[in-house]
Image 1 (cartoon, rainbow, N blue to C red):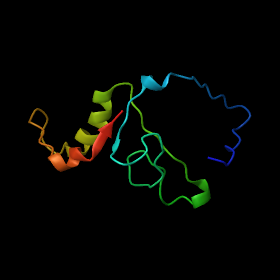
Image 2 (image 1 turned 120 degrees about the vertical axis):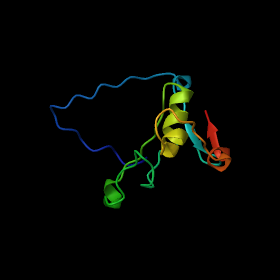
Image 3 (image 1 turned 45 degrees about the vertical axis):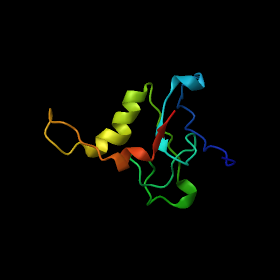
Length: 100
């Protein structure tokens, strides 16, 4: 991003922490850059597509472990069934996904 971040309210404190790259994981579409934030508006945590282009922001969803990423990315979308029943996910929904 070449645009500067907008200024925060003077009384707002934002704590940040730098962590090693290997700390987080991501499940992503094959052929896509796994470290590029999504701004398309069609993913769970994307900014609303109704925002003006100048106000849109990217979201890069990462998890502390691969099972959590897998559940949030693949399984969550296929959980339209009673709890405790087997989860059947079509191979096509998983074949185009990669993980890091």
